[in-house]
Length: 115
Length: 110
Image (cartoon, rainbow over all chains, first blue to last red; front, side, top):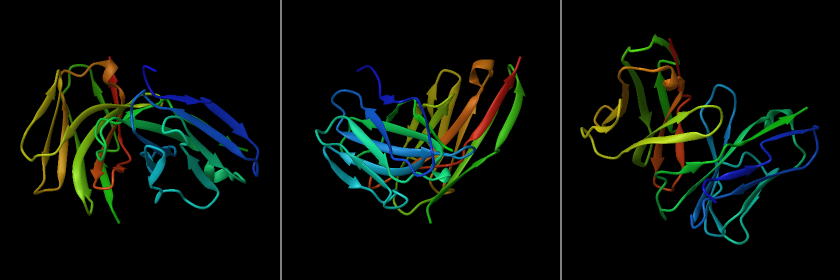
């Protein structure tokens, strides 16, 4: 596609529920990143994929968070047993340059609200 | 702990003014410094800086990196209401993640 696409744009869920957030990167981009942005803060790194594999998942806050990219294109961020503190905008970005984090193009994000 | 600090936190100016936004960083494995403009949700890329002292320019925006001082500035001249946004500074590390500052909220009044 023309840009990074994220769905849904907004998600409201109840505490304790499971959610999946989807990211469709720019066609041909091998690198894919997930970030989380809370109100008044900059985006916080969660995980980076190079192809199908998670090259760096050091930003995932705990084992309730998991992400996959089975075919090296679309990625899904999965959150189990959601908590109110998980409420944030989840941003996905993709980049064409292997080994570099430059000119990463961001999607519009998914605003997750846990009530 | 790696950190990126931006100042000021927010700024209100009038159309036509010139603004300077600041970014300082402390990171272990510096590769590059990037500036993004964020309106609504998606940050849009402005500049990437890797070398000290070389100004990057795009229209009314310009930016420069000082690796000795571990800092960068973003200048916007002849500001317009469309420049109102959050400006994010991020440092790219070896290992491919970006470490972001909290951003500067710029509001340009007509």
